[in-house]
Image (cartoon, rainbow, N blue to C red; front, side):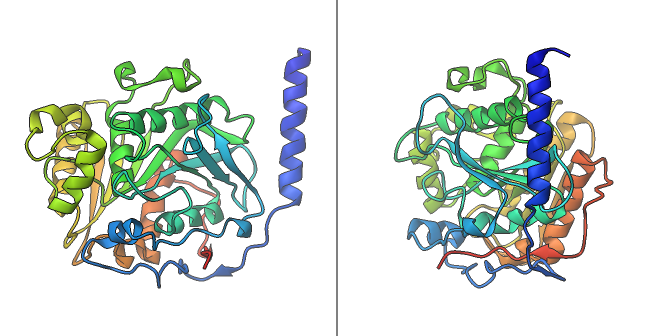
Length: 345
């Protein structure tokens, strides 16, 4: 074994022992309840309104003892091009990972937003959670957010050994406009024209092997006025009047036979992102791939950001889907007890 490889292996073993000895003692509960339940305040525009008004709270990061925060995933040193890694409290490295993209109409939100807090509960089930910030509409237009998302995936995969991750297969989990990014990642797997490799790790794949999308935007041209305005700002065009220009911005238009498995979770009464979008996306993926790899969980009567979507039962089913991709359906770390994710006041 050469000297460099010996040093790498020694470092890996030392870090693994350190993390095992310092594993956090999280309080567990027999359900998936989180403190986000009280703050899932449904308004006329759902979570988007919460974020637009600056009223969404942040996840209290001090509760996690095993974490790495604000890691730059590009060479640009932009404060928005950073990610957090929260390590699981069970299992041994390298850890399977879920990469999370927050929502907020491409204009608001952050990697520590309360709207993604329930997903962090995956750390009690053997998963590392990687939560990503990306450039927003006050700074860039499309396709820069997609370039950031792909750069984040490339970084995670290229630096998996360093960060004690198993990034051979990656599942991305997106919420609302973050769901749009997650779907775009999947729809453009292995298509160099959608990359900006100058952002770093140019020879590493940004392909993803699975998607969980909570009430995602799948068709930018079919949105209510409030969301259309937000979409128009990031896309740089009037999305109502320029449908022909939107093809390379619309996941539903880009689905190919190579699209990976996807779980869509959407409320039938979503007032911001129509439920019909996920119906169309499911149909398009299954038709294009010739396989039943797109699953739509219909949450009857649920509105945008509805607590039903993030309920104990719902989250557990979502994780079952992830298990099938990353653990071949046999995740040895699944348990009934989930940690409580606390928010800063």
